[in-house]
Amino acid sequence: KARGFGAATIYETLRDEILTLTLEPTELVDEASLAKRFGVSRSPVREAMVRLVSESLLQTLPNKGTIVAPLRIEDFPQYVDALDIVQRTVTRLAAKFRNADDLKRIRGEQKKFAHCVKQGDVLGMILCNRDFHIAIAQAGNNSYLKLIYSRLLDDGRRSLRLYYKSYDDRLPDEMCDAHEILIDAIEAQDLDLSERLAGEHTLEMQQRFINYLGSRHTKDVKLSH
Image (cartoon, one colour):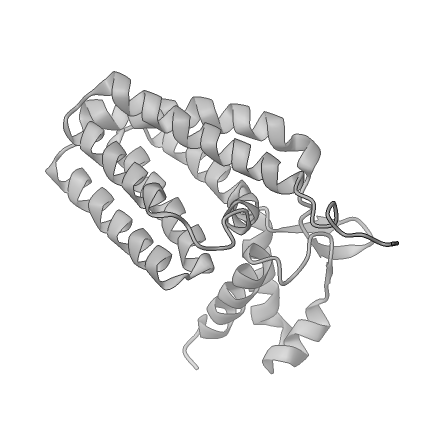
């Protein structure tokens, strides 16, 4: 195998399992067990785990090993506040500074996202949605804001998994249409509309996430006659 191939494969496999919640929050991730599972030495496993820790998907605890990072529901309001501010800002900047190459890149990422939606590929939707918004941030021409935005989007990927669950993993056509409308606003350099649409995007995600957490499946179940 080429150098790094093992680590890359292990990283991608574990990342996908964490994002789809196959590996549950706070679940212990053991280096030796993973090495046995993938049939490799500990070195590529350790390399993959270091990368996942840097992306906040794994967390190393002193004297306790490594776990899947907790999904802290209590932090969600702060997360949404930060996402809203940064998302509106980078989208407004994108509308102001975008060029032809930026628009081509954004539309390309949207095409990938739409394909994943059509195929019902949840993991693809999570990853392509991130790439779509990063392409918008790149058009905003501010590397510091792009870096902050990237971290926010990465931190929110597992919450996005629950968001898609609220739609039974089948997003309605309006969700893809919302992306298209946003692209059109950026292309038209309508700064106010672009910012407003970005804010609505965050609000819709927040409301669906909260509704999913509050959903009940037993209220109509009768336990006695």
